[in-house]
Amino acid sequence: MMRKLLIFFSAPLIIFAAGCARCYDCKQHCTYCEKGNLAYKLCAKNSSGYTSVDSFFIVLKDSGYVCNMLKDDRTICDGKNHIDEAVSFYQKQEYFCLPRE
Image (cartoon, rainbow, N blue to C red):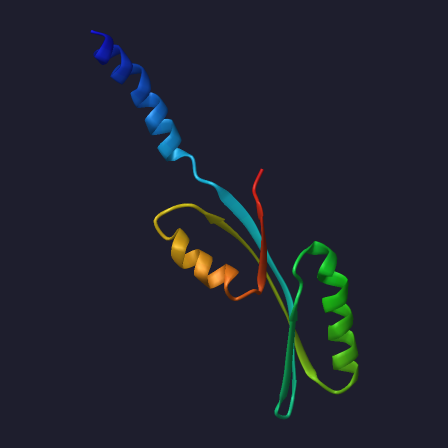
């Protein structure tokens, strides 16, 4: 009897825990500039780094480089593809990610 009660009360907890996924909000704020054979790329490591990237963009563009801003926001959650997503976002070092609250 005690065993049945334990299973009855623990099953919803297990289902609820399995449904919870940790999520991260990831942002990309980069500039990519090229001129002839020279190319430069700079990415912000956190939101306070935006000004450095923007300044780098302006200076190189004024120096005759062709520059593009790379901006993207993504959410990564634990799931069946979370390993592939982690490789594509974290290892590129173009994105910085913060845990979602």
